[in-house]
Amino acid sequence: MTAVPLAALDPIAVFVMTRSPVTVLAQTDLNTDGIRAWILNNLLPLLLLTVALLLLWLGGGKGDNAGVMRRVGGVFVALAIIGLAVSGTGVDIGTFIAGLFSTSGG
Image (cartoon, rainbow, N blue to C red; front, side):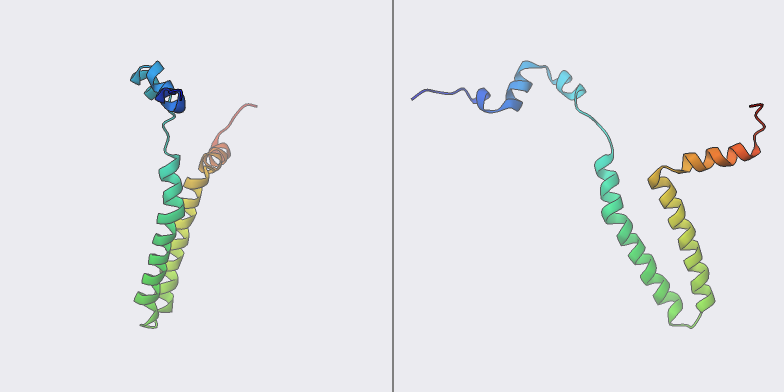
């Protein structure tokens, strides 16, 4: 029976053994995509559900329909701001608004 070195079985071990730890760390891509996806997929729907239940519980039982609608309007504004922040179109809208007030010679 032939002995196979452990490093030959594990490509990551070969990679780590041939390079210094600083080189390995420098080659890893650091970003916030994972936490951003988790917030969008898990935390945001839970917060929206909580807000909806609070609106129904606080205003619905008292018959204060106008107060509930004012709060719902505020929630819609907050959702629009979150949507702009998440989609990245806030820069385009800001550029458009700035273009309305700028006087370019072109």
